[in-house]
Length: 408
Ligand code: ADP
Image 1: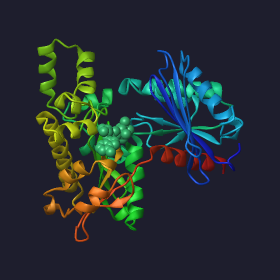
Image 2 (image 1 turned 120 degrees about the vertical axis):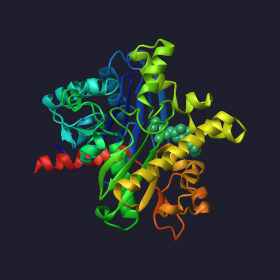
Image 3 (image 1 turned 90 degrees about the vertical axis):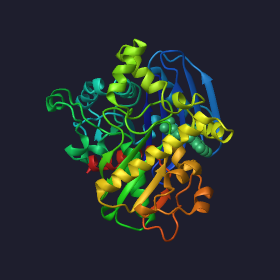
Image 4 (image 1 turned 45 degrees about the vertical axis):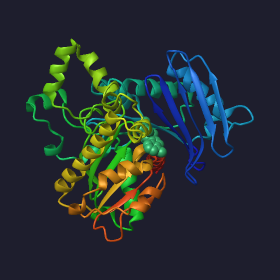
């Protein structure tokens, strides 16, 4: 195995897509990235080489993840815009896996047993885990056996939550029998940004109480106490917590059975309604995209304005709740597409939070866009920061450190 080169391929697979990034871990730069999507329903590849600005896209035929993986190999290794000559130059592949449940509390090397365990968790994450397994198998089929594969779990960071945070008020037997509990998601992102924030604050993370707000199409908020997740807003699935692009977030469970009854929905239809038709889209009637909703609100659309109000209010409540859970607050961080870019959302969330020691520097907040920057006033007791996330980079770091360990 060639670990001197330190090239890591990071794969993020869905049921019909295979997103990838090839990272050079010498300087943590991205050599190429792209997406093979429409797997099973056609096929399309979009490929970019950031250093040269080269972009390529093509309709393809991807009956399964294997053909998509073969295309990924082709675009990386052939033609005048290739970034490597052969996949043998790659040190390892790191896969993002959504659900690791209580089985996986950290990244691990892929073996047949690991693949089977991930597949065994498919019932807990039907949309994600089985497609991950298809990508893992496709990768094993297409790449040389000598290239190690590593799996990094979205849920792993949250395995430090205590039972009082992760148990629901349902009969305990169903936790034991069916593993019904809060797992939390976006763990890789929360771990990455909270560590990055501690470094920026020049503090040891073990001393910090941080509320990490990852706000994107999917959003979650995590209480990070001493570098460990102690509570988080997403739950058994990534549907819980605050309103998102098309997801409803937390609702009274009785409202779910009532709506099912009124619409005559079965369980699958109700799940589609809550996952795909709710959130910003369902509330505003405008769009699932925060930019469209904010624009409509600025133009006077009342439902759009209400949607942004609800979003800000719900985030605010989590900051309060998690500060109470941690008995203190040293910093709030914003990340994800909305967290990094929307000054309006950050301003609305941080308004009237002086009681918690939060005072925003309004000008710094308005200027901040996509870079690591402090946006609280100098006299703010709790600091507020924008911290860009990079889940692929953390997956690649975990992958390199795991294969280096296993080589020793
Ligand atoms: P995902 O969760 O799919 O990774 P992102 O983290 O990319 O999504 O976040 C997408 C969200 O970020 C969308 O709602 C989008 O409107 C919002 N967003 C992206 N750029 C901006 C911006 N400049 N201003 C406000 N919102 C933005």
